[in-house]
Length: 296
Image (cartoon, rainbow, N blue to C red; front, side, top):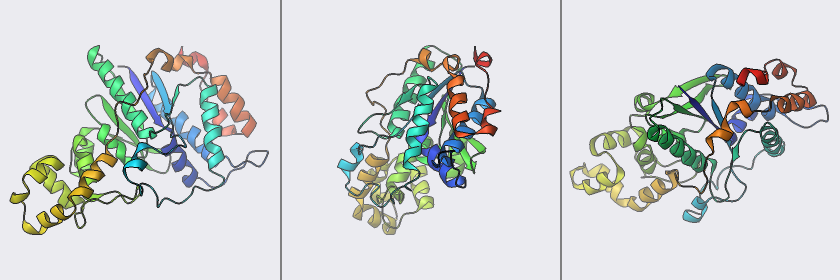
């Protein structure tokens, strides 16, 4: 059984920053998110023992979703001034460790992860491998990517308690299958990304509709069969629902290609991590670093 880990860099960095108290490097630089990211990174590697690792990041340039809807993510507050520089620190350390890093202008890390997971799942199917892809993230939007070959590994409390979400877990928690998750978002909207769904329809009603009619398009094709109180809401906000589904849908054809051999953990330069941790005085992380021989 081969195991691929796709790390959602931005989601994990944000979680680390907000979960940990301030922490300064010897030169005064704030590094709590740096410490927290690599604490999670090392813990997950030790527990999951992956064969391949990739890390994905957002790019500063707006994604295509902004052109679809000007209000997309417009209500998000500006990030703390001491968080921004930590993204660059983390990316530099990861790249120095010779771990493949992916990010593409015009797309979110979600789309990059979606494309890579799609390519890896196809590789697994085409080669009839007994392999699994785990996406390490705190972003529920990625639940739509779950399939027989892809699962999510998500922090459920703080930065240390992780939970696995496969198809069964998604349906048990949200009342919809992974391939209905964009339909759910289309109906209820997403306050964090600042786009509306259908006004007055919440998660329970949305899940009930999807259980009966499968997808958003099927709901509208059968709107005459739906009680008037709900059908009126659906008719009134039909355009919003269609737009919300477009915004929620993760792209699977970002112009990137994964070279699996380059992602092998045997290629990780653990000395680069050791050098970085020593410079930031992450003494507890130094003790948790594996030796290169552990992955050859």
